[in-house]
Length: 375
Image (cartoon, rainbow, N blue to C red):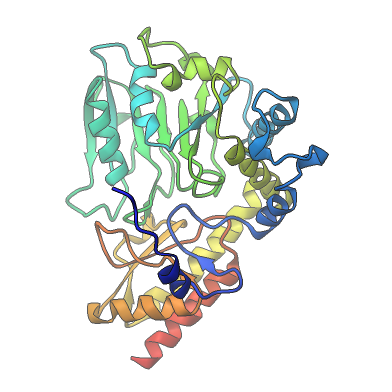
């Protein structure tokens, strides 16, 4: 079926002549500084007369981009030589298949702590290839809390433990990441990587989609401890094979060149801000501002347990659901976009990733206060 164009309708929906605050969960807003650099370089990158989008991934011009992106990421995360980095075309969901194929032999299993839709998807995908042991299931508390996991929680059968460190849909986050010694810890950090200090050495594999804190959609990355490469002995589809991607420096095939270029700019921006330690302080300030207001309000409520509230995705409800559509409409008119909750849970969600400035959260809280005062 040929899609019908909606240009006229869309022009009426989006009347803004300047940047707004995009609170959508992803693809998320990018830093203005990054967008300005990308715009300035779009038609002529480094005097080449070409856009980065047009440069071959085999040319030195792009090879420099992807190498610098890895170097900068390593600097941000203090990565040692015992870890490899690979960039993949596609989102983090790709790794739900890649992980068991790379880390498990046939007949082996992995453990998983089920804390939301993304662990559910990883669980279901893992079952296509291997066994899955669910060591924690947060379904009964509606995913409003996260577990405290230690080696004592492990099944004893799984060869690694899979977690999702931040739950974009339900707004929960591990306040302290598990320290597992008996098996490698594998973390889907799509919606929080680079937002707070972590010790990478606590993990066997970290993977993330780019569209939250790293860059545009269509790109993911994996950070793999070297002793885990090539251990399964299985025949793995080539683009899911971590060993192949590492060996070829993410250039086995044509990568998402422009997304990697934007990621490089984001890494540079983060380092200019002072690195992850500096941005973590800003993120804590943003989250405190909005949660403190919600907790003091008679109209808004946050269903997530305080210890597990996400600093990236603030989920909240209006105590009078009849006001939901009015709240969203007025928010959009005020340049506060993407506040609707996920379709599975409803309510509202303010995604306040690294690129969301403090001024954006301040404007949101001011709007929420004003909206409440009119009720």
